[in-house]
Length: 390
Image: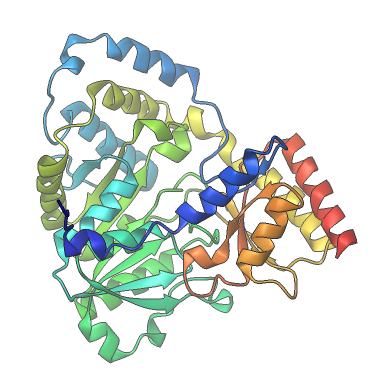
C-alpha cells in the first residue's frame, strides 16, 4: 500500500540543523574528542533548589492526574507577579498569559493561529531557523528583511516598502537575538508599535534570552512599551535562565485575542504541562534573582576573553550585547559551510554555519559562549593554530 502524505507535511522544509548535526555525529564517532562551541543552551548545571522541588513535586498525587488545560493558577499568578516586579508590566493571569510547551512549540504554533494560506510573514534575517517551519505549516509566505550591522541588527522599518507592509500580516522579532547577540532598545520598540499599528501587522517578539543581557539593568522588553498589547505578544523561556531546557516550558504574554487562541490551540494538541514541572518553575520565579545573578558577570567575562583574542587573530565579529553567541565572520576565501567543516574536521571545533540562519549569514559562523574557562583556553589555542596553518 502506498501512503500518500499531506501537502502540509510535504511543504515543511527539512530542519536546517539536521545535516549539520549529521556531520557532527559522524565526526564524533571516530573517537577524537570535539570541542562543542555550537551548543545553543547555557552550560550551567540545574540549580539544586529546582531539582529538589521537582523531586518533591513528582510525589504529589495531584501532579499524576490531568491538570487544568491552561496551567496552575498559582503559576500564572507567579508569572504575572514576576513580570510586574522585573519589567513593571501589568499582565492579567486570567487572559493575558499562556503557558507553552517550550517557546519553540509556542512560536511554531502562532502562524497557524494567526495566518491563512497565502498570507505573508516578514522574517528579519539572520534569525532562528525554526520560525520557518511554523510559517510553512500555516501555508504562509515569507519575505525576508535583511538585518544590517550599521543599524545594530535592528529592523529598519523605513526600508520596508509600503507595498510589502500592506500585504504582510505578521512579523517575527528576536532580541536578544540568536545568532547575532544584538539587543533592542526602548526607542526601537516604540517605533515597532507605531509601525505595526499603522500597517495593521501583528508582532511576535521572542525574548528567550531575557536574562542574557550585558548592559546595565534588565533586557528591554516589548511588553513594556505603550500599545504593545494591542499589536502582539512576547515569548519568554525558562529553559535558558534556569538551565531546565529538558522540562519544556515557557509562556507568552500580550494581546488577549492571541493569548485566548493560543490557549485553545494548546488544548487541541497537548492537554496540560506536567504539574511537577509547573511547581519547579514557581520555585524558580520566586528565587529568580538568586538563581540568575551569576549570568551577567559570567558571560561578560567570557565575551571579553574570547573577543580580545579574536581581535588579535584578525577576526571580524559582532560583540554581543545579549544572548549566548558571537557572530563571527569567516576567514577570507571561505563560505560559512566550508569554514564550519574546516573547524570541525581539522581542528575538532563544533560551531554553526551562518547560512542556516538565512540570508546574510553565508560569510559567518555562530560561536557559542557556553564554554568553561578551560574550554575557552582550548578554543583559543586551536584558533591560534588555524591562523598559523592559513
